Amino acid sequence: MRIEVICTGDEVLTGKIVNTNFSYITQKLEDVGLSVRWETTVGDDREDLLLAFRLAGERADAVIVNGGLGPTVDDLSQEIAAKAAGVELVLSEEWLSKMQEYFARRSRVMPPNNTKQAMLPAGAEVLDNPIGTACGFAVDIGKARFFFTPGVPRELRRMLEEQIIPRLLKKSGMQAAIFLKRFHSYGIGESHADALLAGVAELVPDGTVKLGFRAHYPQLETKLTVRGRDMDDVRRKLAPVEQEVRKRLGNFILAEDDHTLEGVVLEALKSISATLTVVEMFTSGQIAARSAHLPGAERVFRRGIVARDLGEACGAVGIDPGSFPEGVTRETAEAVARAARRYTGSTHALAVLIEIDEGADRLEFGGTICIAIATAENVVSRRSRVVGGHDWVRLGATEMGLDCLRRYLKGLPVHERIDFEKIEDPVTRDR
Image (cartoon, rainbow, N blue to C red; front, side, top):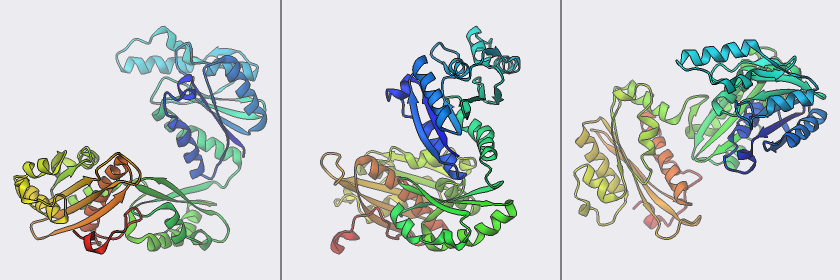
Protein backbone atom coordinates (compact mmCIF):
# COMPACT_ATOMS: atom_id res chain seq x y z
CA MET A 1 0.00 0.00 0.00
CA ARG A 2 1.32 3.43 -0.98
CA ILE A 3 1.22 5.81 1.99
CA GLU A 4 2.01 9.52 2.06
CA VAL A 5 2.40 11.80 5.09
CA ILE A 6 1.64 15.51 4.78
CA CYS A 7 2.83 17.74 7.63
CA THR A 8 1.34 21.23 7.77
CA GLY A 9 2.27 24.50 9.41
CA ASP A 10 4.57 27.47 8.80
CA GLU A 11 6.49 26.67 11.99
CA VAL A 12 7.32 23.19 10.66
CA LEU A 13 8.16 24.39 7.15
CA THR A 14 10.52 27.12 8.42
CA GLY A 15 12.24 24.86 10.95
CA LYS A 16 11.08 26.83 14.00
CA ILE A 17 10.02 23.53 15.52
CA VAL A 18 11.54 20.10 14.94
CA ASN A 19 9.10 17.80 13.15
CA THR A 20 9.18 14.86 15.55
CA ASN A 21 5.63 13.89 14.57
CA PHE A 22 6.74 12.68 11.15
CA SER A 23 9.45 10.42 12.57
CA TYR A 24 6.96 8.99 15.08
CA ILE A 25 4.39 8.27 12.37
CA THR A 26 6.87 6.52 10.09
CA GLN A 27 8.39 4.47 12.93
CA LYS A 28 4.98 3.28 14.10
CA LEU A 29 3.96 2.35 10.56
CA GLU A 30 7.24 0.49 10.01
CA ASP A 31 6.66 -1.40 13.24
CA VAL A 32 3.50 -2.94 11.79
CA GLY A 33 4.96 -3.58 8.35
CA LEU A 34 3.67 -0.45 6.56
CA SER A 35 6.02 1.90 4.71
CA VAL A 36 5.72 5.57 3.82
CA ARG A 37 6.45 6.35 0.16
CA TRP A 38 6.31 10.16 0.27
CA GLU A 39 6.53 13.00 2.80
CA THR A 40 5.38 16.54 2.06
CA THR A 41 5.67 19.59 4.31
CA VAL A 42 3.33 22.49 3.51
CA GLY A 43 2.91 25.90 5.13
CA ASP A 44 -0.37 27.52 6.14
CA ASP A 45 -1.33 28.55 2.63
CA ARG A 46 -4.66 27.58 1.05
CA GLU A 47 -3.42 27.09 -2.51
CA ASP A 48 -0.34 25.13 -1.46
CA LEU A 49 -2.39 22.88 0.79
CA LEU A 50 -4.98 22.25 -1.91
CA LEU A 51 -2.27 21.34 -4.43
CA ALA A 52 -0.59 18.98 -1.93
CA PHE A 53 -3.89 17.23 -1.09
CA ARG A 54 -4.82 16.76 -4.73
CA LEU A 55 -1.38 15.47 -5.70
CA ALA A 56 -1.36 12.99 -2.81
CA GLY A 57 -4.88 11.91 -3.68
CA GLU A 58 -3.73 10.86 -7.14
CA ARG A 59 -0.56 8.92 -6.25
CA ALA A 60 -1.22 7.40 -2.80
CA ASP A 61 -3.65 4.84 -1.44
CA ALA A 62 -3.69 6.39 2.04
CA VAL A 63 -2.59 9.80 3.29
CA ILE A 64 -1.99 10.93 6.88
CA VAL A 65 -2.23 14.72 7.30
CA ASN A 66 -0.77 16.13 10.50
CA GLY A 67 -1.68 19.52 11.90
CA GLY A 68 -4.08 22.34 11.07
CA LEU A 69 -7.05 21.16 13.16
CA GLY A 70 -6.95 23.93 15.77
CA PRO A 71 -9.39 26.79 16.41
CA THR A 72 -7.34 29.67 14.96
CA VAL A 73 -7.42 31.34 11.55
CA ASP A 74 -4.22 29.62 10.36
CA ASP A 75 -5.67 26.14 10.97
CA LEU A 76 -6.91 25.25 7.51
CA SER A 77 -7.05 21.46 7.22
CA GLN A 78 -10.84 21.02 7.48
CA GLU A 79 -11.55 23.82 5.02
CA ILE A 80 -9.06 22.62 2.39
CA ALA A 81 -10.02 18.96 2.84
CA ALA A 82 -13.63 19.81 2.06
CA LYS A 83 -12.61 21.79 -1.02
CA ALA A 84 -10.32 19.01 -2.27
CA ALA A 85 -13.06 16.42 -1.72
CA GLY A 86 -15.66 18.61 -3.44
CA VAL A 87 -18.03 18.77 -0.46
CA GLU A 88 -19.27 21.39 2.01
CA LEU A 89 -18.17 21.95 5.57
CA VAL A 90 -20.88 20.92 8.02
CA LEU A 91 -21.16 21.18 11.77
CA SER A 92 -20.67 17.91 13.66
CA GLU A 93 -23.10 18.18 16.54
CA GLU A 94 -21.54 15.05 18.02
CA TRP A 95 -18.07 16.61 18.22
CA LEU A 96 -19.40 19.99 19.35
CA SER A 97 -21.08 18.25 22.27
CA LYS A 98 -17.84 16.43 23.15
CA MET A 99 -15.90 19.68 23.14
CA GLN A 100 -18.44 21.37 25.40
CA GLU A 101 -18.19 18.45 27.81
CA TYR A 102 -14.37 18.63 27.61
CA PHE A 103 -14.39 22.28 28.76
CA ALA A 104 -17.13 21.70 31.36
CA ARG A 105 -15.10 18.92 33.03
CA ARG A 106 -12.33 21.48 33.48
CA SER A 107 -14.71 24.13 34.79
CA ARG A 108 -14.04 26.32 31.76
CA VAL A 109 -16.28 28.04 29.23
CA MET A 110 -15.60 27.01 25.64
CA PRO A 111 -14.43 29.98 23.54
CA PRO A 112 -16.65 30.62 20.47
CA ASN A 113 -13.80 30.01 18.01
CA ASN A 114 -13.47 26.39 19.16
CA THR A 115 -16.70 25.67 17.29
CA LYS A 116 -14.52 25.78 14.17
CA GLN A 117 -12.99 22.46 15.27
CA ALA A 118 -16.39 20.77 14.87
CA MET A 119 -16.72 21.87 11.24
CA LEU A 120 -15.94 18.79 9.10
CA PRO A 121 -16.24 17.86 5.43
CA ALA A 122 -19.68 16.41 4.70
CA GLY A 123 -19.63 12.62 5.00
CA ALA A 124 -16.34 12.52 6.90
CA GLU A 125 -15.67 9.73 9.39
CA VAL A 126 -14.88 11.04 12.88
CA LEU A 127 -11.63 9.82 14.49
CA ASP A 128 -11.95 10.15 18.25
CA ASN A 129 -9.55 12.31 20.25
CA PRO A 130 -10.19 11.50 23.93
CA ILE A 131 -7.46 13.83 25.24
CA GLY A 132 -7.98 17.01 23.20
CA THR A 133 -10.43 19.19 21.29
CA ALA A 134 -9.01 18.63 17.78
CA CYS A 135 -11.37 16.31 15.95
CA GLY A 136 -9.62 13.81 13.72
CA PHE A 137 -11.46 12.67 10.63
CA ALA A 138 -11.15 10.55 7.50
CA VAL A 139 -12.38 11.44 4.03
CA ASP A 140 -11.75 10.32 0.45
CA ILE A 141 -9.87 12.71 -1.82
CA GLY A 142 -9.15 11.47 -5.31
CA LYS A 143 -8.08 7.82 -5.12
CA ALA A 144 -6.84 7.96 -1.53
CA ARG A 145 -8.30 7.72 1.94
CA PHE A 146 -7.10 10.75 3.95
CA PHE A 147 -6.68 10.66 7.72
CA PHE A 148 -6.44 14.06 9.41
CA THR A 149 -4.64 14.21 12.78
CA PRO A 150 -3.87 16.91 15.37
CA GLY A 151 -0.41 18.43 15.64
CA VAL A 152 -0.16 18.05 19.44
CA PRO A 153 2.20 15.03 19.76
CA ARG A 154 0.39 13.16 22.51
CA GLU A 155 -2.95 13.57 20.73
CA LEU A 156 -1.47 12.44 17.41
CA ARG A 157 0.14 9.38 18.96
CA ARG A 158 -3.00 8.11 20.59
CA MET A 159 -5.11 8.71 17.48
CA LEU A 160 -2.52 7.04 15.26
CA GLU A 161 -2.26 3.92 17.40
CA GLU A 162 -5.94 3.53 18.32
CA GLN A 163 -7.73 4.88 15.25
CA ILE A 164 -5.57 5.02 12.14
CA ILE A 165 -3.20 2.04 12.18
CA PRO A 166 -6.04 -0.50 12.59
CA ARG A 167 -7.83 1.10 9.62
CA LEU A 168 -4.67 1.07 7.50
CA LEU A 169 -4.00 -2.60 8.29
CA LYS A 170 -7.55 -3.50 7.32
CA LYS A 171 -7.27 -1.49 4.10
CA SER A 172 -3.91 -3.12 3.25
CA GLY A 173 -5.31 -6.64 3.58
CA MET A 174 -2.32 -7.73 5.68
CA GLN A 175 -2.49 -10.72 7.99
CA ALA A 176 -4.68 -10.05 10.96
CA ALA A 177 -2.12 -10.65 13.73
CA ILE A 178 1.02 -8.51 13.93
CA PHE A 179 3.33 -8.25 16.93
CA LEU A 180 6.39 -6.09 17.58
CA LYS A 181 9.10 -7.43 19.90
CA ARG A 182 11.73 -4.92 21.03
CA PHE A 183 15.12 -5.36 22.67
CA HIS A 184 16.93 -2.33 24.12
CA SER A 185 20.71 -2.51 24.37
CA TYR A 186 23.63 -0.34 25.37
CA GLY A 187 27.25 -0.64 24.34
CA ILE A 188 26.80 -2.16 20.91
CA GLY A 189 26.52 -0.23 17.66
CA GLU A 190 23.99 -0.80 14.88
CA SER A 191 26.45 -2.34 12.40
CA HIS A 192 27.87 -4.64 15.09
CA ALA A 193 24.39 -5.80 16.11
CA ASP A 194 23.46 -6.34 12.47
CA ALA A 195 26.50 -8.59 12.02
CA LEU A 196 25.80 -10.52 15.22
CA LEU A 197 22.19 -11.13 14.20
CA ALA A 198 22.85 -12.05 10.58
CA GLY A 199 20.37 -14.69 9.44
CA VAL A 200 18.31 -14.66 12.63
CA ALA A 201 15.05 -13.74 10.85
CA GLU A 202 15.56 -16.67 8.46
CA LEU A 203 14.95 -19.06 11.36
CA VAL A 204 11.33 -18.63 10.22
CA PRO A 205 11.64 -19.34 6.47
CA ASP A 206 8.28 -17.98 5.30
CA GLY A 207 9.43 -14.34 5.50
CA THR A 208 6.90 -13.32 8.16
CA VAL A 209 9.60 -12.22 10.65
CA LYS A 210 11.35 -8.92 9.91
CA LEU A 211 14.46 -7.72 11.75
CA GLY A 212 15.11 -3.99 12.11
CA PHE A 213 17.07 -1.48 14.17
CA ARG A 214 16.59 2.03 15.51
CA ALA A 215 19.72 3.72 16.80
CA HIS A 216 19.24 6.54 19.31
CA TYR A 217 22.55 6.98 21.10
CA PRO A 218 23.39 5.78 23.61
CA GLN A 219 20.85 2.97 23.15
CA LEU A 220 20.04 0.69 20.23
CA GLU A 221 16.60 -0.76 19.69
CA THR A 222 16.45 -4.13 17.92
CA LYS A 223 12.99 -4.88 16.53
CA LEU A 224 11.31 -8.09 15.43
CA THR A 225 8.06 -7.60 13.51
CA VAL A 226 6.12 -10.86 13.27
CA ARG A 227 3.01 -11.56 11.21
CA GLY A 228 0.72 -14.56 11.56
CA ARG A 229 -2.78 -15.94 11.17
CA ASP A 230 -3.48 -15.23 14.83
CA MET A 231 -1.53 -14.52 18.01
CA ASP A 232 -0.84 -18.21 18.63
CA ASP A 233 0.78 -18.39 15.20
CA VAL A 234 2.76 -15.22 15.95
CA ARG A 235 4.04 -16.56 19.27
CA ARG A 236 5.08 -19.83 17.65
CA LYS A 237 7.13 -18.00 15.03
CA LEU A 238 8.59 -15.49 17.48
CA ALA A 239 9.81 -17.96 20.13
CA PRO A 240 12.94 -19.34 18.40
CA VAL A 241 13.93 -15.96 16.97
CA GLU A 242 13.73 -14.00 20.21
CA GLN A 243 15.61 -16.77 22.00
CA GLU A 244 18.41 -16.49 19.43
CA VAL A 245 18.50 -12.69 19.72
CA ARG A 246 18.93 -12.94 23.49
CA LYS A 247 21.69 -15.49 23.02
CA ARG A 248 23.64 -13.41 20.49
CA LEU A 249 23.27 -9.98 22.12
CA GLY A 250 23.77 -11.42 25.60
CA ASN A 251 24.64 -9.01 28.40
CA PHE A 252 24.16 -5.98 26.16
CA ILE A 253 20.35 -6.33 26.36
CA LEU A 254 19.29 -4.04 29.18
CA ALA A 255 15.50 -4.14 28.81
CA GLU A 256 12.74 -5.41 26.54
CA ASP A 257 9.54 -3.96 25.07
CA ASP A 258 8.25 -1.03 27.16
CA HIS A 259 10.70 -1.52 30.02
CA THR A 260 13.52 0.99 30.54
CA LEU A 261 17.04 0.75 31.91
CA GLU A 262 16.22 2.88 34.94
CA GLY A 263 13.06 0.85 35.53
CA VAL A 264 15.01 -2.42 35.47
CA VAL A 265 17.52 -0.98 37.95
CA LEU A 266 14.76 0.24 40.27
CA GLU A 267 12.97 -3.11 40.24
CA ALA A 268 16.23 -4.93 41.00
CA LEU A 269 16.88 -2.64 43.97
CA LYS A 270 13.29 -3.01 45.23
CA SER A 271 13.52 -6.80 45.04
CA ILE A 272 16.30 -6.80 47.64
CA SER A 273 14.89 -3.91 49.72
CA ALA A 274 17.91 -1.79 48.83
CA THR A 275 18.37 1.98 48.87
CA LEU A 276 20.49 4.06 46.52
CA THR A 277 22.58 7.21 46.57
CA VAL A 278 23.98 8.65 43.35
CA VAL A 279 26.91 11.05 42.93
CA GLU A 280 27.30 12.37 39.40
CA MET A 281 29.56 14.92 37.72
CA PHE A 282 28.92 16.74 34.42
CA THR A 283 25.70 14.82 33.72
CA SER A 284 23.38 17.65 34.83
CA GLY A 285 21.79 15.15 37.22
CA GLN A 286 20.42 12.95 34.46
CA ILE A 287 20.78 9.70 36.43
CA ALA A 288 18.73 11.11 39.29
CA ALA A 289 16.23 12.68 36.89
CA ARG A 290 15.64 9.37 35.14
CA SER A 291 15.28 7.39 38.36
CA ALA A 292 13.86 9.43 41.22
CA HIS A 293 10.41 10.09 39.70
CA LEU A 294 9.54 6.47 38.93
CA PRO A 295 6.69 4.80 40.87
CA GLY A 296 8.13 3.22 44.00
CA ALA A 297 11.39 5.19 43.81
CA GLU A 298 10.54 7.02 47.04
CA ARG A 299 11.34 3.78 48.89
CA VAL A 300 14.65 3.30 47.08
CA PHE A 301 16.20 6.58 45.97
CA ARG A 302 17.89 8.03 49.06
CA ARG A 303 19.94 10.93 47.68
CA GLY A 304 21.13 12.47 44.42
CA ILE A 305 24.29 14.58 44.53
CA VAL A 306 25.04 16.63 41.42
CA ALA A 307 28.52 18.16 41.25
CA ARG A 308 30.25 20.41 38.72
CA ASP A 309 33.73 19.17 39.53
CA LEU A 310 35.64 16.67 41.64
CA GLY A 311 36.07 19.10 44.52
CA GLU A 312 32.30 19.54 44.87
CA ALA A 313 31.71 15.79 44.62
CA CYS A 314 34.24 15.05 47.35
CA GLY A 315 33.06 17.88 49.58
CA ALA A 316 29.45 16.74 49.35
CA VAL A 317 30.32 13.37 50.90
CA GLY A 318 32.88 14.60 53.44
CA ILE A 319 36.13 13.80 51.61
CA ASP A 320 39.12 16.13 51.35
CA PRO A 321 39.56 16.83 47.60
CA GLY A 322 43.29 17.14 48.18
CA SER A 323 43.42 13.41 48.86
CA PHE A 324 43.28 12.74 45.11
CA PRO A 325 46.04 14.70 43.33
CA GLU A 326 45.63 12.56 40.20
CA GLY A 327 42.05 13.75 39.72
CA VAL A 328 39.38 11.43 38.32
CA THR A 329 40.52 7.81 38.60
CA ARG A 330 38.93 4.49 39.50
CA GLU A 331 40.34 4.85 43.01
CA THR A 332 38.75 8.30 43.34
CA ALA A 333 35.36 6.97 42.19
CA GLU A 334 35.60 4.07 44.64
CA ALA A 335 36.39 6.43 47.53
CA VAL A 336 33.50 8.75 46.63
CA ALA A 337 31.07 5.83 46.33
CA ARG A 338 32.10 4.42 49.72
CA ALA A 339 31.82 7.81 51.40
CA ALA A 340 28.45 8.54 49.78
CA ARG A 341 27.03 5.25 51.02
CA ARG A 342 28.23 5.89 54.57
CA TYR A 343 27.20 9.57 54.52
CA THR A 344 23.59 8.86 53.45
CA GLY A 345 23.07 5.46 55.05
CA SER A 346 22.05 3.80 51.80
CA THR A 347 22.78 0.16 50.98
CA HIS A 348 24.17 1.03 47.52
CA ALA A 349 25.99 4.06 46.14
CA LEU A 350 26.81 4.84 42.53
CA ALA A 351 29.52 7.36 41.67
CA VAL A 352 29.90 8.59 38.09
CA LEU A 353 32.87 10.93 37.76
CA ILE A 354 33.89 12.57 34.48
CA GLU A 355 36.97 14.44 33.35
CA ILE A 356 36.46 16.28 30.06
CA ASP A 357 39.41 16.75 27.71
CA GLU A 358 40.71 20.30 27.65
CA GLY A 359 39.96 22.33 24.56
CA ALA A 360 37.00 23.11 22.34
CA ASP A 361 33.98 20.82 22.14
CA ARG A 362 35.18 18.77 19.17
CA LEU A 363 34.41 15.32 17.84
CA GLU A 364 37.96 14.04 18.30
CA PHE A 365 38.02 15.12 21.94
CA GLY A 366 36.11 13.32 24.66
CA GLY A 367 36.30 12.45 28.31
CA THR A 368 37.37 9.95 30.94
CA ILE A 369 34.52 8.27 32.81
CA CYS A 370 35.16 6.51 36.13
CA ILE A 371 32.30 4.61 37.71
CA ALA A 372 32.11 2.89 41.07
CA ILE A 373 29.40 0.98 42.93
CA ALA A 374 29.77 0.53 46.69
CA THR A 375 27.93 -1.63 49.19
CA ALA A 376 28.77 -2.52 52.78
CA GLU A 377 30.55 -5.65 51.55
CA ASN A 378 32.54 -4.49 48.53
CA VAL A 379 33.15 -1.94 45.79
CA VAL A 380 33.48 -2.46 42.04
CA SER A 381 34.59 0.06 39.45
CA ARG A 382 35.48 0.61 35.84
CA ARG A 383 37.21 3.30 33.76
CA SER A 384 36.32 4.24 30.20
CA ARG A 385 37.54 6.67 27.56
CA VAL A 386 34.80 7.98 25.28
CA VAL A 387 35.58 10.13 22.26
CA GLY A 388 33.09 12.75 21.07
CA GLY A 389 31.55 16.08 21.94
CA HIS A 390 30.40 17.09 25.41
CA ASP A 391 26.82 15.92 24.87
CA TRP A 392 28.05 12.55 23.59
CA VAL A 393 30.17 12.08 26.73
CA ARG A 394 27.36 13.27 29.01
CA LEU A 395 24.80 10.88 27.51
CA GLY A 396 27.29 8.03 27.43
CA ALA A 397 28.30 8.50 31.06
CA THR A 398 24.67 8.56 32.22
CA GLU A 399 23.87 5.37 30.36
CA MET A 400 27.10 3.64 31.38
CA GLY A 401 26.53 4.44 35.03
CA LEU A 402 23.01 3.01 35.04
CA ASP A 403 24.09 0.02 32.98
CA CYS A 404 26.98 -0.78 35.32
CA LEU A 405 24.54 -0.72 38.24
CA ARG A 406 22.16 -3.01 36.32
CA ARG A 407 24.96 -5.44 35.62
CA TYR A 408 26.11 -5.41 39.23
CA LEU A 409 22.60 -6.09 40.54
CA LYS A 410 22.09 -8.89 37.97
CA GLY A 411 25.42 -10.57 38.74
CA LEU A 412 26.89 -9.71 35.31
CA PRO A 413 30.42 -8.40 34.62
CA VAL A 414 30.50 -4.65 35.21
CA HIS A 415 33.45 -4.16 32.86
CA GLU A 416 32.66 -5.50 29.39
CA ARG A 417 34.12 -3.68 26.42
CA ILE A 418 31.62 -1.57 24.46
CA ASP A 419 31.72 -0.20 20.91
CA PHE A 420 31.86 3.44 22.02
CA GLU A 421 35.12 3.19 23.95
CA LYS A 422 38.52 4.34 22.75
CA ILE A 423 41.28 1.73 22.80
CA GLU A 424 44.08 3.02 25.00
CA ASP A 425 47.64 2.27 25.89
CA PRO A 426 47.53 -0.64 28.40
CA VAL A 427 49.89 1.25 30.74
CA THR A 428 47.29 3.99 31.34
CA ARG A 429 44.11 2.04 30.67
CA ASP A 430 43.33 1.01 34.24
CA ARG A 431 44.56 4.11 36.02
